[in-house]
Image 1 (cartoon, one colour):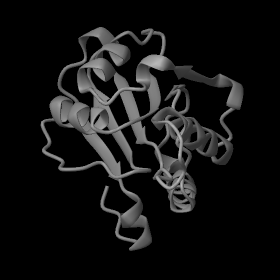
Image 2 (tube, rainbow, N blue to C red):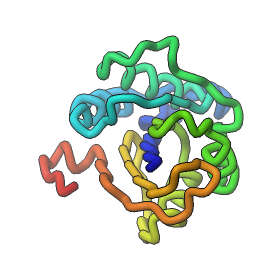
Image 3 (spheres, rainbow, N blue to C red):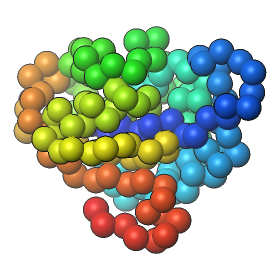
Length: 167
């Protein structure tokens, strides 16, 4: 069995005049990332590998999650190929994960995350908001063969603000 946890980076600060790759988190983004990372503790598997896009907003989201969840910062693997908005690129990267890892936590971007979730779970989500946590379980023993997964949890910051979690 393989399990992937997809976390969309926190809301970015569009007021900063910088490249897309260097765009930081906004104050709201930081608050939402803290809120979600504190909530999902019980949903994490015992062992996992952590990957993140190299974009500043994704890296900072990964670092906040790691600090809140006691994940050693040096274990996060930053990958250029995760700086993508295309589901096909995301899929290619995930399918190349080493099979010695059963659980992958990945910090990335929409529309890649949204399209990946809909393709591999048969859902028709309209949006995966910033700071969201999505977990998908696959019955497969190899990442290369993942196909039809089950959406286990979809946790959005707005649910936590309204205290309406239905997972």
